[in-house]
Length: 220
Image 1 (cartoon, rainbow, N blue to C red):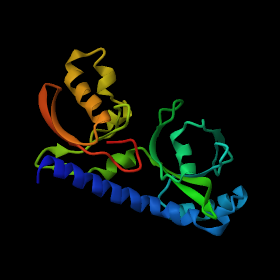
Image 2 (cartoon, helix red, strand yellow):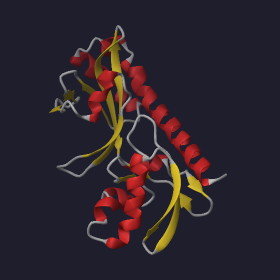
Image 3 (cartoon, helix red, strand yellow):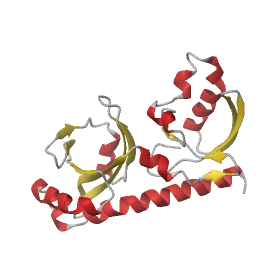
Image 4 (cartoon, one colour):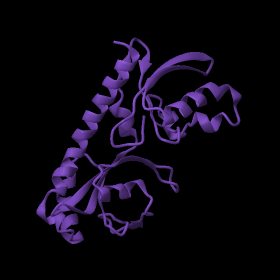
């Protein structure tokens, strides 16, 4: 198996795992009382079902950008937020970093339909560490492993938790550390290229890498 094939197979495995996790949200969103968009009824269902689901929390997005939580908390999302893509019928997955607490979360979302019209969104939250857990079994040879970066070049899943916790971004680091230039150049290429195989220098070693985009995300 060559590296490009390994990357494609790894992405297929990850997408399959993510689709499985998102399925419970899709089933919930298809319930009549969820589609009616009455928040009291929706949260009654969510509170009843959440212990049987793997999500840490489930919340509802309204067309006006209000994100409602079972706790009563309400956040207002800007129109350009990635999450608002569900009103175009998209199944949006994203990695969220809370600017106040630095907590990382893996977020799934699915549209809530009413007569073929998107009337809201249902969101499920995991700890950010779950994304790294999903790629633990994706390996290559004796030492090869998988990691995920977002559209800005920040590492959001890695076998080394500190890479995610510290939000390592070689593009940003290269501005102060010239030894990261090759690593940064690779990430810049990945961001604008669908797939490929390349090499880069980092931490005193030469690394070989293959990369492939992940569906329903802006990740690679």
